[in-house]
Length: 227
Image (cartoon, rainbow, N blue to C red; front, top):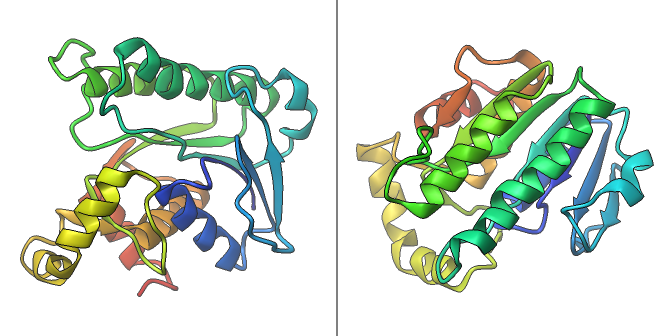
């Protein structure tokens, strides 16, 4: 399987990249982003591209892939709706529309978030924008599209969030994750489980088009490499 990965330097993207590189069924990973990962690996090729709203200059490098894992995202904290929409909606659709034209047989997986507002009319700005993005992606002529809506994500294997607030949150709550997992297993997932679940959905599909933590954890648990 050949995979395009957007957002490989973010917390979720780092976890997804790790699982892709470890998976013997993944032949090649193309990481596209505004900065490189700094990870040398035989399977990994990187395209550093400054303007993710216009991918025309690298269009010739983006065909021939089986799946796209779109993990690029930012926190809405301190952002205007226009700026958040540009990164969350416009960047995503620039990639998705181009890939749908180049490889309509591809599976496109978009990392959204728990609480996303598919009605696009709620009070929460980030949830409306995520909902608008999900709805637009689902209309594109891919073989299949899936919306991953993780809630709390525990970073694993030394992965660290690039967002200061998230780093502070995980430093405080990290010791509580084993207790939370034991009592409410659907509340928390991990970067490892997200990656494994994405790979399984890309290979096998899923009855649910929208996958939250409980779905992600179940898919990863059934993976042969799950821990």
